[in-house]
Amino acid sequence: MKNFIILAVVILGIGAIGYTLYKNKTELETSANLAMKTSDHIAVTMETVKEETILRSFEANGVFEPSQELKLMAETAGAIVKINKRKGDFVKKGDIILQVDDRLIQSEYTIVKLNRDQAEKDMKRFENLASTDAVTQKQLEEYQKAFKIYDAQFSALQKRLDDTRVAAPISGYINQEYFEMGALVSPGMPIVDIINSSPLKLTVKVSESEVSSIKKGDQVSVKANALSNDNLIGKVDFISNKADGSFKYEVILIVSGDKLQEIKPGMFGTATFKSTKEEKILKISRKSIAGSIKDPGVYLVENEQATYRPVKINPLQDGTVEILQGLKVGEEVISSGLINIKEGTKVKIQ
Image 1 (cartoon, one colour):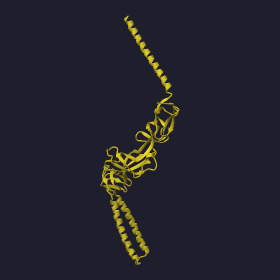
Image 2 (spheres, one colour):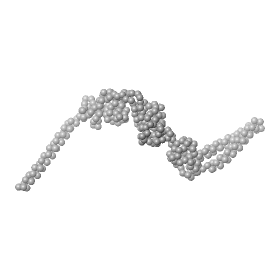
Image 3 (spheres, rainbow, N blue to C red):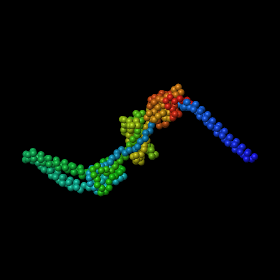
Image 4 (cartoon, rainbow, N blue to C red):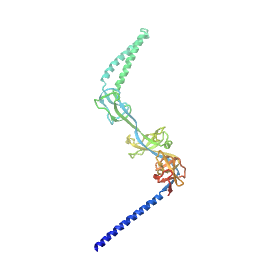
């Protein structure tokens, strides 16, 4: 009797579990069928195109660059016999960085200088004699020609001698060196990289709507992103006349300030362009834009269907975009549910 009761309880339990599973399955199927029936229309929310008055202000990021940067090459051949400046040293324009062995050139220079000086004396002597008709014009021309030949040789050797003293063509810091004592150099071989960071330049990229508000000579606020330094001024020195592949225009700022020496070339910087002129613009949220910044568009609702319309925009700093073309104030665009929207999709405004 006891075993029969236990068996009856087990059978009842199994039956209850089976009923519950069957009921849940039925409810899921019912919900799925209901969802399929109601999915004919996608629920969306709308955003109204608004007109706002703004003081056009925008930021542009870029990289600090030295005002001058060059790779100094050797112009002569020989062994390095003296080093005056090394990596990290500051050099002024004309400072001798290193000396190349010039003994052979010095010997040639001495001989040619003696010949040139003698040819010059002979020429002047014959010029004096020619004034008294003591020599012919042909004899005078021969001595003048001899002097010109020796003078040209002298000038060439003077240049070769000067090239053995490798001098800095600009002022700045030696950022890299490519030599050692006793090493052989040859024409075209790199010697040092020199960087002049005074003043610094900041190169930024701006959009077509932004570049129209920038003029050469404008002063803007500049800061280095890695530093707390925010008292720098950038003066617009260059504005490109043609956009690059990303439809951006290059603007170069000459930067000045009290603590400019804290900033190193290669650091990231931000320039803030501000305008005192009020402008009226049309704005919508960035999330209401379908597609990319290069090929933007929006969806409107007509007869409960999504209708695509291409627009021209200018991204703003606050997560919104300026509508340059394609929409009017008061029009409504779909702002949510865009991931499932395409042309002709049935929608329901919530």
